[in-house]
Amino acid sequence: MQDITKQKDVTSEFERLLESSGMLAIPKVGDVIKGAVISFAKNEVRIDIPGFKTGVVRGREIFSESAEVAGIKPGDDVEATVVALENENGDVELSFRSAGHRKAWDAIAGAQTAGTPLEVTIVEANKGGLMVRVNHMLGFLPVSQLAPEHYPRVAGGDKSKILEKLKSFVGQSLKVKVLDANEGAEKLIVSEKAVWEDEQAAVIAKYKIGDTVEGAVTALTDFGAFVKFDALEGLVHISEIAWQRIDHPRDVLTVGQEVKCQVIGIQGSKIFLSMKKLIEDPWKNVGDKYHIGQIVRGKIIKANPFGFFVELDPDIHGLAHVSELSHTPIKDPTDVAKVGEDKTFKIVSIEPDSHRLGLSLKALEEAPKAEEKKEEDKKEEKPAEEKTA
Image (cartoon, rainbow, N blue to C red):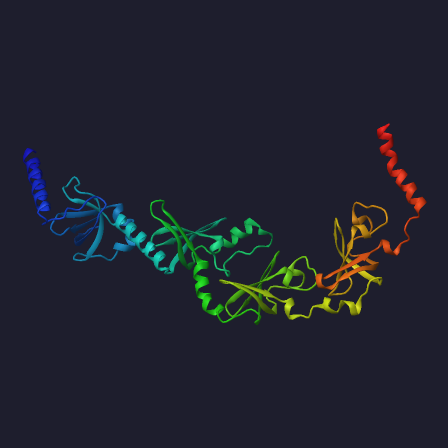
């Protein structure tokens, strides 16, 4: 036993002398070394570290990176990370796993710096986005960073339906760009939208504000409709769908419907469209059809605390304010009429530039006489007087 100890001491002293003379660079724990494979057994790979010792990779340090080492054979040059300078057999303990980990992070960092897209595989879905695998590393693809074609547009933002949509992507491959890579925190955030934006840049450059495009409605949301054209997708805000007021895009549009739009805005990869710009504004000639004091018939299409929206014709809608519904104060407009009813109104104001037309019900009724009004006021005041007494 003493002879072995003496031999190790002599060897260590010899190595120190060689290193100090510059003839041998002894690796440190954590270094990635290169060497030639001496032998490859089921649970052990032996590697020649030039001018130093024999290294060995064992057990899980092999299999964790099985895809990287499956095809190696004696004589091949490989990379491994130093785990310990000497194991129980006097060999340098090495790891393919650590080297693969290091190589993976280097590749990811390089892709982030160069802006190079990476191909990832979706392995899991949660409410916030998708877990992806890239170069044996796990990363996260937030919902907000999905390309428009994969973004889960769900009516009402139903979280269970969004998750169901996201789960359908598991097993698929996507091209992404690295947004954030922090090796120390094992944090990797990627974006499919960034790749989509780059691909669309050249196509978007062909368009300018004022251009007319034709496309199909791909989705309807509370705030508008998405229209796809020439591999691009633009948003028609609800206020740009029609000149008249609508409660939801589905009231006038259906998914798959072919429509014509005008480009009204371009912000980076975002394109904003308008359908109503291609239709003559009916309010320009509203004076030819309606005038103040005119008695008209209209259908109540919506009731709010502040009054009724009334359809006079398919293009012109008016507002009957709550103060114009009765000569006596009312708390709820639906006490006077219901949605869907046809009523007769008097036009009390027209503002073509603001697209406003005021209607009145009380203007068609005779105002209460002064004496009657005085009596009404007394009735209203009486409870207050009694309360004071």
